[in-house]
Image (tube, rainbow, N blue to C red):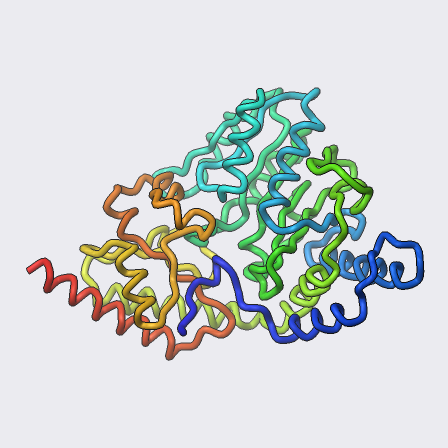
Length: 379
């Protein structure tokens, strides 16, 4: 199978699997237990916490382990909104966020908070001027993703951080698609909260983290024990946490891959544009991280392309894996002002560490065959 859906999830790295097997065999005790076996598990969690913190330029005590990106986003947005309501009721986000952010904001809107959604301008970029105009004295939180999961668009997070440096507004970023794609530091970007997920970086599913800058007010959204400094109750998933840390530790071995993946992505897009007339790369002129190609195919629906590629052993998607089964048009492409035809005929290809040139060339050949067949049907 040719796997070109790494934005949805990544395969587990071999070293991560080995580390998780080791932990399963040797660290079974509850880390909240005070006996030596429990404390052994506790030490492992703290070592993993330090690795996460060092990766993003934070402190170990600022890392809270969660069940994944969705929980991290929920905890950040709901937790900060409730804890800071005395200071205001206004939250700002964008129209291209992941459903884990948009639906969380919808929930808060139903519970008395005011939500403002920043548009995408006519070039496909976040409208920074509108963002600045939208901020008011009741704004308590701004939540913006670092990299869009459908187009690979790299949002201007640094510019937003600069805009907020003299304001008492919490800045949260969903960095789930950014980790392993770009280097960044929470201090350099002036980020107060940052959501991360393990399964996007060749680690296990069901594990993530939320960075919470020291001094940031936030309430727990779960109730139970005192784990994770009272911010996230529940017995920690030691095996997954250790796997997450191992995946982070392996990232530096693959940093040269970024250039290779970008080269493969450029080859993919260039050749497709040369052989399929009127094909369009959605967000082509935007700053994008390596490996994302959201492509409009004339005369072919995205669902049809996906199924035909799957029959040929090639896995892709039509958008976010969290909403692909809903049969709703992409809210990201809608926000970019695209027509219904363009949205419905678009497919996302996302490359990974193991993607080869041969796989890219094979995919191009199959897409050309699918396109030629669709033209024959139209004739």
